[in-house]
Length: 230
Image 1 (cartoon, one colour):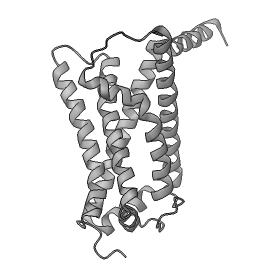
Image 2 (image 1 turned 90 degrees about the vertical axis):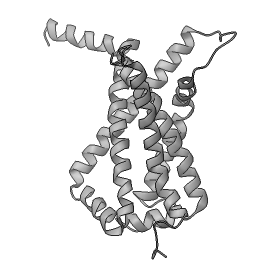
Image 3 (image 1 turned 60 degrees about the vertical axis):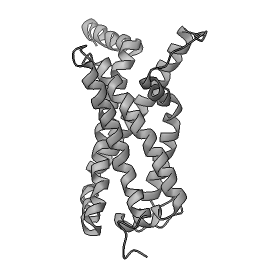
Image 4 (image 1 turned 180 degrees about the horizontal axis):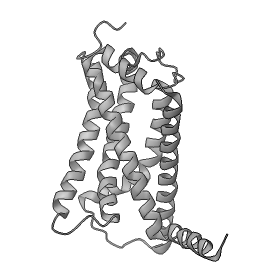
């Protein structure tokens, strides 16, 4: 390895180790994860189109195992980096200001910001449960391979499963709200002229994500979908 290549690697490592580098990686991985969350929500909403539609969608996703596993590994790496670097940035911030403010005035986004650390582990635990429930069938709930419609209906008919899901996706929506705004800020896309609009867009996206996911268990509990499923 020549000196130029070594120097470039050193520069990249230095950028990664610096707070600004960590924030950039958090922003990019956050963008990937938000994109996946929105796509996953849109996929879930196909349950309103009936059993055949949502089950055909599931079969399509599983039709190419190599591509499916490549996507899963990519998302897992992004999620791991996002969690790790977010935690590192939080610890750096704590060390930089070990003494709390005597008086701190919160703004609305500050409440969402606190959930980035407080809600993160809860969301991670929910994702594990969600995968065990609807992907592997190892959550101890009714499950039939690639029969997504019936699995969703039978699972959400159990009130406490639906309640856990609703609380968890509400946290996901709050996470998306603050995460999207933070990403725009980190990437330098928060020009003062457009800042109010970007804040509102972030807010709306977070709310729509939460409502989109919540609509499914609510529809099951109210009998809007699931007729004919035993």
